[in-house]
Amino acid sequence: MSNIEKLASQNAPEIDNAANEAASNESNNDIKKMKQNIDWTALMGNTAVAQPKTIDPQVVIDIFTSFLSIPTEVNVSFKNDEGYLKMTVNMNFREKFIRNFETLADYKLVACTVAAMGGTIPAPEGYLAEEHKLEASDVDPREDLFVQFLNSPFRCHIEPDFVSAKGERFFCASFAPGYRKVVRFCLKRTEELENVIQRFINDAVHAA
Image (cartoon, helix red, strand yellow):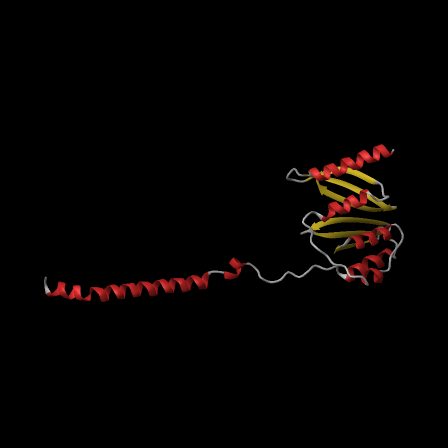
């Protein structure tokens, strides 16, 4: 063995250790870079606690006080806002101006609005004095409200289906608590909804 080969053989362990250390350092640097580049917040999700949704008291006051101005036409409709019931109120005042309101709602607010449409206008202070907790529903909150309207004294007017651009069919119906005062529903046709509608029609026919 030559002197060069002996020297290389003697230094081989140190060279291996140095190479391993260099590789380890390079690997650690890569890991540090990865830690800097990874969006850990996005991976772990937003840990902030979701704030409960509430009804804006000013909108409630505006709706009830607007009824005091005696609108000549009122249209009410509903949306499903991530499991919360959202109510839209459109008021026409002798075709001179229109007021539009949109608010989260509970059944009590809907009932007060319907009463106002029928001529019995509640004081907003009475509604706001009570606690109104809103909880998201796992199902469309409009469906239960629609069933309550079906069981109310108001006549149900079944309108033509609305068909979306995707070909989805929506059942549409309206109720009239007062003259030119209309509450409208437009719900996606499901098997459960079909059964509810059919039972309602059968009961109406037999009652007649």
